[in-house]
Image (cartoon, rainbow, N blue to C red; front, side, top):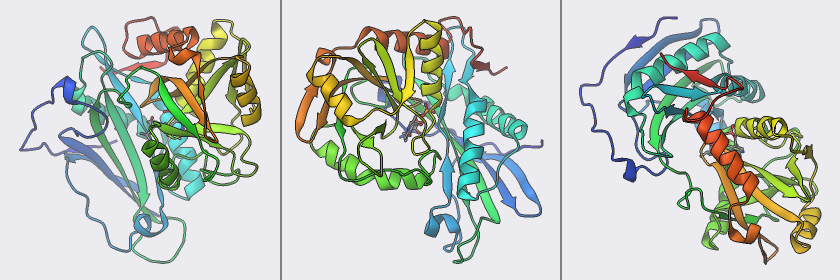
Length: 354
Ligand code: PLP
Ligand code: COI
């Protein structure tokens, strides 16, 4: 596949690691590629980072035809840069594309594009502990018509941002509010797809929770508002009476790649892991009786994030005494060890850029 490269004439200085935060600084270039029905994907190019020009009728601006992915490049101790399970992100992007009637991308081409772009920007991968280069591919409909149809033209863009921790708390426990008014997704809807609309619909509840001092909301299912689904930007796991429980993938939650990796790690360690329906009543009872031993969120941006407090209908429940539980710590250490190349990778999850 041919990818043209136009180098920036105004390279930016690399940021100081202590200034990173999440998603505020971008690298010098971006990747662009166009799609038109009949011609397929064409004009793959790496160009200087900058604004995009869109027709005011473009489908994405009116009907939300947009999907995205999030993955990271990590700086290993030997200086090399590696990705974590990139093919899983490509597969999920294609599943999201199918749901939103956007064009899919051949898996091999997508991996070639992703690695070519990250290789080009790899000097931006920071090396301080806990930092990485967050990569954000996104794909949207660009049809210049107000008619509502499957996209006949689209664009794929990839941008990258050197990042520190997603939450200001870092690896310290976060406070989560269980949301009982708004819902994020329903079965048959777009919950399992990583589309911008899911996040737009989530914002009101997240803002309410933030105003009350909570980092994010924990969603309940959209029909009965009874079953635990996921947190705003991560999947959730609980240790109840020795069993690790995580909501089953029923169609309304995002099948997280970190979630999948945690399940594989925990099963290999011999922990009983159950992907099942978990009602908020069962969770509240486990909290009240002290049987909830640990709770954590997992996701690319958030990594493994211990939950130190859950609030449901005005009642505040401390979790693990506000400390980081041993399983949470094990997952954090093992997963980040594999991702940053400081621990062996028996699953062959990492993808080294040459
Ligand atoms: N759930 C939601 C809503 C998310 O935004 C994310 C982040 O991508 C996740 C779960 C975790 O997915 P992953 O582990 O693939 O990053
Ligand atoms: C990620 O973890 O990659 C995400 O997409 C979360 C994001 C909404 C910040």
